[in-house]
Length: 215
Length: 403
Image (cartoon, rainbow over all chains, first blue to last red; front, side):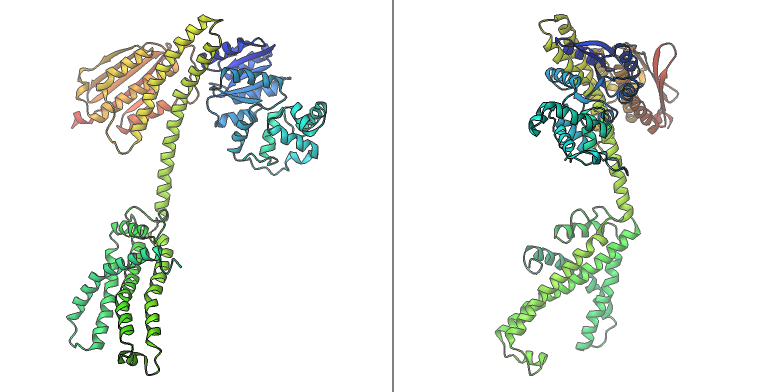
């Protein structure tokens, strides 16, 4: 059973999301929050697997709340950012703060349910094309440090490239003709070398360092 | 090759002939002025007189080009006849002496080069015809001496002359057009500032739409999706969702109306338009439908207000009520508008909503209202009153009553 907390300042959105997710046999909504400050304490108490996080909330917004969850909880829950518009600077900031993916409010009920499952499972990337477009529209922050992607082996680089296209571990294993276990090991060392919390963070780093061109 | 003959060269030739035609009145005026000093009608003096008149025409042309609108005329001609790119030439009259001086330089060179090309265009074809028809005419001998080249060759050389002159003059004008007819640095800066203001207005409207209609539509979408998902299993939720969808849609239409009102106001083409307090009834009915009943206490003299005060007051009430809907939800509001000693006093109050915390950035509407009041040298502020209510107060001076 995947345990979910919903954070949104609109009561109607919370009610709707709860009805959609609770109708699934494998999902259960265990709590709600209407501000960013509230969500931190609710999550600390209920320890859900996934948090649906509205980016724009009063007091503490979704970005800061995501950052606080990542910094103070171990293991931290997967955060799925919920947004009205995809070209939203806040979404990008939330992803950089540690959110595992983002979900549009106009997505179908089926897409929402799948997104929660996928993020909870964590072995493939949510909406790879949308993520690519989001990163492509940004200026890469200038940095003097050499890109951390330099430390990857050739094989790990191949795995990272396939990760950016949205393939899961099993599909990557098929492409590279290796066992899924080997891919899992490679993904683990890619995440470790890039200092990434999950696939989404690793893919953002890959785009931002120019290791993979988002265009 | 198209620089020598072809469409582009033909257009530039028209541009130069236009310059030549513009030169004529100055030149004729110069001739009239100078001929009063001339006593002798010898050929040498006639030629001298012509050139002196041309010399006099140049400063006269330069002076008339200082008239600001000349830049628009010359820019338009240059653009239309392929001498300058559309983007790089100014489209407004000169606004500084720097721009006027540049236009004057342009005008003088357009007229002088135009005069030369026009003159060649007029003189050369007859000369070529004469040469070809009467190749043995002693005329050529007189000009070129006894060892003259064949007449056909001379005719060809002569015919090429205006073509080359046209190409060279056209190229020179095209090269100097951006510097002489283009906007000055100050004008570029002003244009950039105007664009920045327009962009800021567009961004503000985009945010307004995002906050009002975007939020409402996504809430409606999620509610409908959820209702469809639990249609059979949870009919109670479906009924509640339908009600919520209906109310949210009504609210969104009201908010959309406000934003579109702002949009229409930003159009410079329609100054002094927009709803006035006379349309307050419609607004209040609309709000009541969206769930905010308003108890209004209105001064009987509102109909006699000057248009701008009435419009500003309407917008303040409209934005204030939209904020009530947005931040406090479905609550009753009280509106009071009074006229006393040349001032309009407006007060709107409502209980602060408990379950609807305000969205971040909710203060933009307040700033808009304050700006609106400030334009009329009035003021507008809002805040909680301490007894669980929110109060918006505005004071607008009524110019018409004082004078």
